[in-house]
Image 1 (cartoon, rainbow, N blue to C red):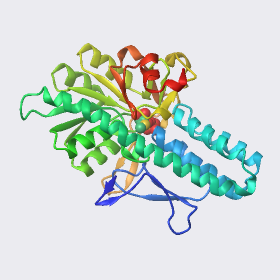
Image 2 (cartoon, rainbow, N blue to C red):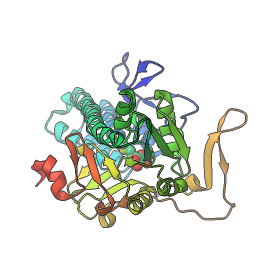
Image 3 (cartoon, rainbow, N blue to C red):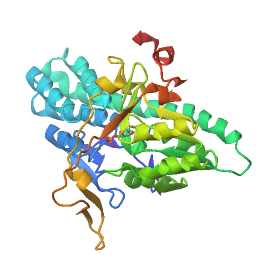
Length: 365
Ligand SMILES: CSC[C@H]1O[C@H](OP(=O)(O)O)[C@H](O)[C@@H]1O
């Protein structure tokens, strides 16, 4: 995607040294565009756990490069296995992390240690290229959905889309998932507007989705998480599109905390609720998402404090709860497939069911 006219991906290898890894520090956006240079597997693990880098497909891609960095230090079998396990433990919910590391292990285990470094960088680049292509395809399939809805609107009326959290290009290698169709619709001149859920507690919507859409010129309005249902009741939402961190073979959807509540409100107001994902986000090994998807519990301080730009222009954090009030911080929830209108994948759209997914990905019977 472009930033001030220059094309970027969300992760790339340093052009000069050809081994260190660059990412944007997403904890500094939207107030500062800081590029971080990662030079060790420890740097990568910290970037993922601290959410300097985040978004299901992107943490998988960055972890793949993290394994390449680890092998630069020690390309032995022990190093390969131990660093893959360490990276897999950085965040439990997004299946893309496990998928990318398993793919790297399958590619690297058979190779002699002395040849593993170059092979690891090549495989990580393939993962990045495939993610960007898959998300572009998701955009094209989702664009048709938006065009069909727009055609039903009165002439000149804008198409209102609600999204939760950030499933934009900065959450993937490029294009994004939920936002990809929106970028394409806007670029093709459709009159679209996006209600951006702030997405407490880390405000990925207010900070990242609003930054992305504003940078691309897409009309949008930031709203509190609690306002979405009201907007739906008053005919202000035509479709909800969100991303996801893990979809089960039955079509249950894990996504940022609060997604389930949006799905309930959408069903109550008969509003289509779509989920955009590359097939790397499908966990074919489980069916019951509520029972079996691990939900990351993050620090209470993310609830008791909020980050933003202070009056002196510095990025800082303020406490918003009493000193001794405990806080709970589940980072994801699971929307049962019955509340999901459909899934937008790189192979097309399908119902959020096992048969729907198998119709697009038949090799997983
Ligand atoms: C395109 S995946 C985006 C997905 O990942 C986010 O989680 P986090 O910000 O904690 O990495 C969120 O659930 C998004 O929908």
